Image (cartoon, rainbow, N blue to C red):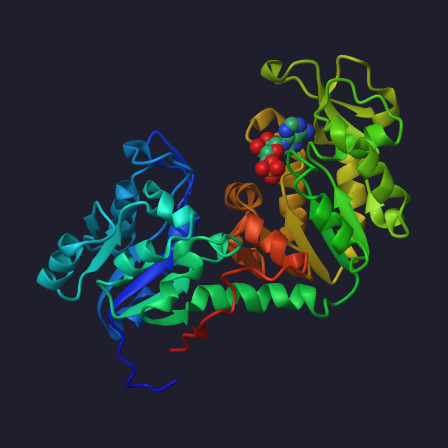
Length: 384
Ligand code: AMP
């Protein structure tokens, strides 16, 4: 790429979809990542404008405004980011033209249904005010939305450097991972991860399953799981996976953390064959952590997605905290994807102890399944 590249007024589709509670940002990891290459891009741009989605608003809803994100970026870069409460029209152009060299953030893309509908006229209207478009929202790259697949039809477009980083790191897992390759899956549901499990099993050596999702498998094996989370509609599929050629690669907890009532915060440990009808499985146990640890210590590649228990409740954080700490100290190539696992790492360890932390949970899972993502590698990579 030529060193005298000039981008003009640059529009960056970032992933600023951060967890919010009453308009207060709960975790700024994605914002920090989104501004990682800002200085380099800024140097060759007349102005830089970010845009993103936030949550799932239906229509315009102030609760989902990106204004708090503009304030957070301002704090992080120590310079006021100009927030523009719309996405297109002459107002956007005049604000950008009247403050050359500044950083801007537009309002939530999802205030307009046209974004979800991949409306081409919407794509033209938004990009009309800019010279260059950079797609750098890996976390949304599995969506067929206008800002992901259609903005590039109207102006010079590049794949952003964060997105390229993500793809290169995930490729190391899909192409020829150094064996043994261990995947740890947790979180609430198996329904959204069964496809992934089926596609990953032939490639991995061990698939460690914790979190709420292990109970559907355990019930399929005939255990009484009491009042633990279970997706009964998926019992047969879970059974089929366990009976498949690769079923023996799945390692389920032999012992779990249980409670009679989540609000009590009381946590005991039991062998999975000892649960009573009123037990709720809320975590993996000490014994299961040791079992998972021995497999992790022998692995050269590790991918982790989803917490091992209800870790937001500090009484039930043991399994997730332990796996975080163990994974942090491995000599393996370690990749983590998914908001909850990333927030566990930020709470219990340090992101710098992992080789790659993916900003996109759903997108990284789809990529690992071998799916072609609508927004990946569709534009030439920006190399600065
Ligand atoms: P997911 O979005 O599917 O990755 O699920 C993340 C959620 O799973 C977190 O909010 C955890 O609290 C929850 N979770 C993990 N383990 C359990 C469990 N044993 N029972 C109920 N929920 C769980």
